[in-house]
Structures are given as C-alpha cells and as structure tokens.
Image (spheres, one colour):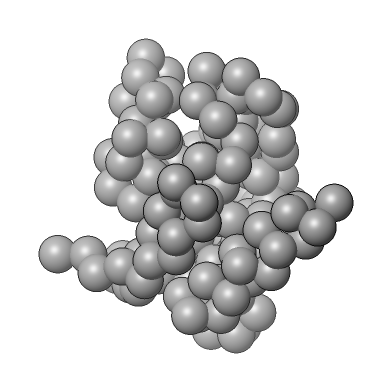
Amino acid sequence: MITFLEFNQDKFTFKVATDRLYNAAGVWAKADGDNIIIGVSDFFQQRNGDVAFAEVREIGTAVPQAAAFANIETIKVDVELPSPVSGVIAATNNKLEMEPEFINSDPYGEGWLITVAAENWAADESQLMSPAVYLEHIKAEIDMETRQ
C-alpha cells in the first residue's frame, strides 16, 4: 500500500507518494527490479488539468536523463515531460491510449506512463528529489504563484 505526504492549499490537497523519487517537472521514478516505472505526480496532474491525450516515445527508444520521453496534452497546456532517468523504454502503458484520464484519477498507479531499462540508476537516482524534498518544492512553487 502506498503511503503519502500531503499538503493542503486552499481547497486542494496534493499527495506525494513516498515510495518513489521526483524531478522538478513533477515526473516520478520508481524502481521495479531492473526497470524504472515513470509517471507524473498528483501535483503535476492537478496543476495542468484534465489529460486529453498522452503520447509516449516507442518501446526501444533510448532516452537520456532530462530528454523528453512523452507529450501530455491537457485542457490547459501541452507539456513535454523530461525523463528522470537514462535508459531504453521497455514498456508503455497502453491503457492511456483510450483512457488518458487514468493520469488524473490514479497518477501513482494506473496512470503510469512508461517503464525504462535504466542505464545507471544509481547516478540518476542521486539527481532526483526525495518525497520530502519534492513536497517542499511544491510548496515553494505554490508560494511563488500566489505572490504573482
């Protein structure tokens, strides 16, 4: 069972799963054996709105860390997602072709995007944020937005 750190802002509650790491763009990475499962955070999906379309690179595509691995189109924005790890795409979530709303309804579960066979997880992992650090990152982003 996933445990969460939570942050409330006005009427919104943002959840950060504690069993994975995050990059500044709100993309998470979770080790699963030799592979890394990748998706977007609850904060990312709430901030960007309902997902209308999710397009990920093909299986077998090499993806360097920080390079775009997917394009998410929402009612608000069109966002390219930077990979939290370097490696080769080993699997994609085919459910998202017909039901991209899983990204909004279950970002830490059924809404995962890809699985990557990581080239150097230890090095990539050291450059990602822990759940607690990512929660502070979210708070800082919200604080900056409310000041504008």
